[in-house]
Length: 325
Image (cartoon, rainbow, N blue to C red; front, top):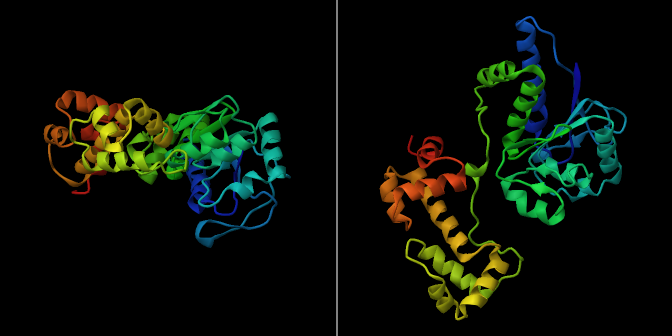
């Protein structure tokens, strides 16, 4: 049997602590009902120092010991809904996570839990994922990690990363499938009425059209961004944007990339796809009409672009996120 523990810490998502262990417990029950043996033991909640922690919204989490004293076979690092720097600056904890990984413990994170593995040096030069909204912060802190924020889950063998805040569900089901088989994992998903087929988190991305990559506002580029936000459906050229900014075309391109982290064309595509997503959510308009409304001419090309940027087709997106049903 594999001993399992969840590491609870201040501001952790409490559902990501108890929910993971409940899924493992249900998996054990399903395995037992089919005549097999339990695969997960312990199912402990630990903390960095053995003391009770205060989870998200101040919910108290009672723990059974310190991670400094125990060595589970699998250690789950749940999402953090708050400032993470105090955890990352906890040298004893970071050293312990690195030591556990060297000794064979499988570390499994959801959402911001991957920050802890990265700080402990476990993800150096390796592929990893985290919540899509934390990707920029993660990359600025851990440039040597191969961050792949489009992916919902990455299994690196001795470590596993899951993306979004509620991806602890995907993480738990993946661990069940890995150690108990896909049939048991599918059984858990059915019992809990969970979607066990999410491969990417791009359908959940929210494009921040006002974000500045450098943190410093370039007034001319901001003026261009605001114009593009109001006129994304028009035929937009670099020459038009340069005129709006009062800059030369090459200067515009350089400063736009520095300010936003993308080219004007990439930025325009993001605006158009975001507008299309909104129309798919709140209207019954067909894809052909939406294609024209957001500035494209060819519905087939639009469908391909939409899927490449969101991971799903327009039809699949509407089925999943429509607010009209």
